[in-house]
Length: 452
Image (cartoon, rainbow, N blue to C red; front, top):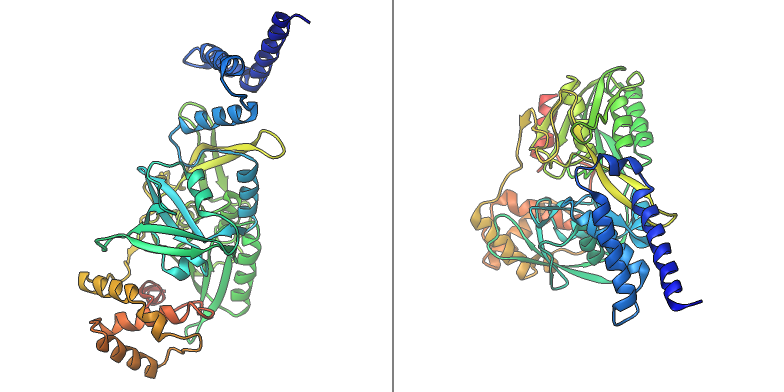
């Protein structure tokens, strides 16, 4: 076959492929677009053709098309819309089942900064002391400002038992904080519950909204009903969210049939509005207060807003994170896809959650440390004083507290007694199972119990 004819056939095949990829998905798009999209598709075809025929090295069609898809999504300037290549697609499936490799932090991008939404309980990140609101500036020596979220996630993840170094900036600290974390499998147990001793008030902690959360919350509520518990605290602090369906199903366990839980609205003028109402009678009808903080995001905010706006209970803590956008995954093949932001969440009263968050009925911040105490904590950290004092068999007792106070004084560290006891207790429970709740230092929980 003559060379020109071969090239012509090749070009026709490329054009047919592009038409199928970019036009055949939704023919009506071209007729309704405000700009002549076919002109840009022609540019794309010409560039692809030039690379194939003129570029000095052999180019990979797969890499070119994957790069083109990423470029389109990056142009949206939306950190939650992303291309899911084979690896990302598999990671997404792992996360929704609650088991994945990493250090255990939920992150997002705000104004070009990489912000920690929340550390996952009992994860390497939480045990190392990473907190909600921390700003990650470097990962393994690489500056991350301006990076896309999916690339940042890939830098943090890695082989089990390998390490990753994070540099963090935190409010109250003049300089950066360095963390070296060992990657490990992270299994999220989404629900824990108990009855607060001597108070007959239920405590229900929901850590995320996964595929098993509804079942586990129902089990907890049945337990409270069986024990005659008429008041509960639902703790959503540091809950980064999860599945929309899960948050709606959990809301149905608490809210009367027919009441609105949440609505989603797509692009203005698109007519894409969905209103989700409770489809069943509530499983639990007792009084409740919901605890939230700036690490409560997405599905946590849906449940909080539904409870507040339906007059079902009160919200206590500090304003939530404000992640109220809906992502939908579309399969392009068995192993790749895209996640696109298709709508935003609104509470039953019509309040937009995204970038605003849920304001609590009772504003109760946690105790803040003074500038002097911050400097003392940095000195303790830099000199590894806690590592030297606390052993795996150390117990949190009155004698241990007094001994720790003398130890700090001997090393020239000045701290309030309450602060010293708090950091001692926190460090001890890095080596053993942490109690489900803490009435000594958790001022928000104590206040919630008083109000109930």
